[in-house]
Image (cartoon, rainbow, N blue to C red; front, side, top):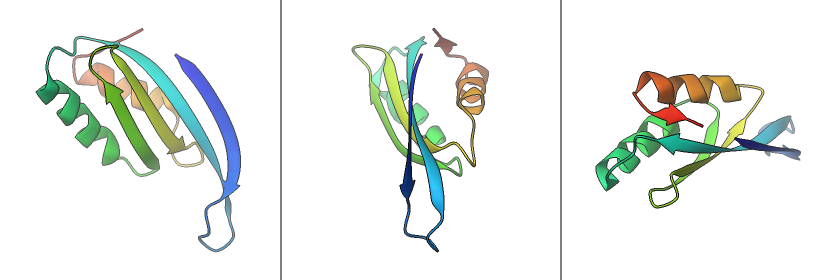
Length: 86
């Protein structure tokens, strides 16, 4: 798991938000349907800005507002769905 964090003004009332990018290595994804379902579930979370999943490398890159969501929440959600997080 790799993490990067930066602050930016989201333009919503001038409030700064902590934009964090998390790269997760995921085991158990075997098809494009798995990938699409995982992206769909992650995008429904309040605070997730972007999700990119590469089925070939088994990596998910998630950009999110760490003021609303924690990396551990993302990991727990994927684990609960039956995926292995490395």
